[in-house]
Length: 150
Image 1 (cartoon, helix red, strand yellow):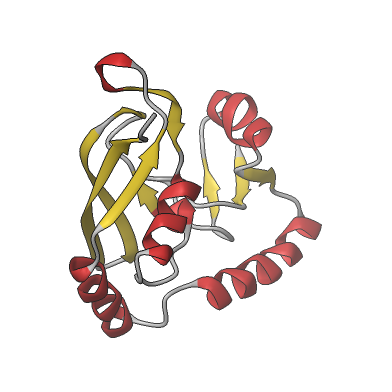
Image 2 (cartoon, rainbow, N blue to C red; image 1 turned 30 degrees about the vertical axis):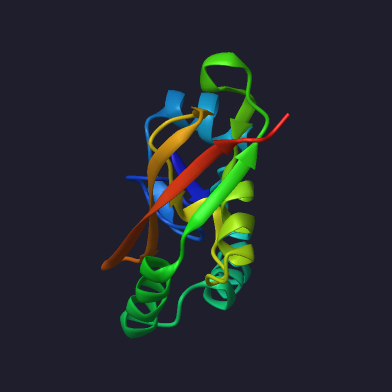
């Protein structure tokens, strides 16, 4: 099955890429989740607009990505969340909350879709978060999740 990706899919491609996938994976996961659209000749025209939007939001080059990585190393990211006994959170920490915490700590503006979390963050503690800034450059930083005072 030929599809056009509309979002970054790990191990598959970037927005605007035309890829061949198994029928079940495309029909049952990628299309319903909105990660892709079916390939058609008319849809191929949409690829150009998807790629233009991606270029506007992408990091310019590897050099710029290394600058952002250096900025992230200097930032202490901390999120205060409501937690119950034993340090278990009410809900979980989302990528959008992490991006907001990085910006409020004085860090660079990041794309939440490029964050790679170590699973669902549902407890207090320190977690290592990785972000793919550029195809050759990845950055990681520590995220401290602390319980809110009652």
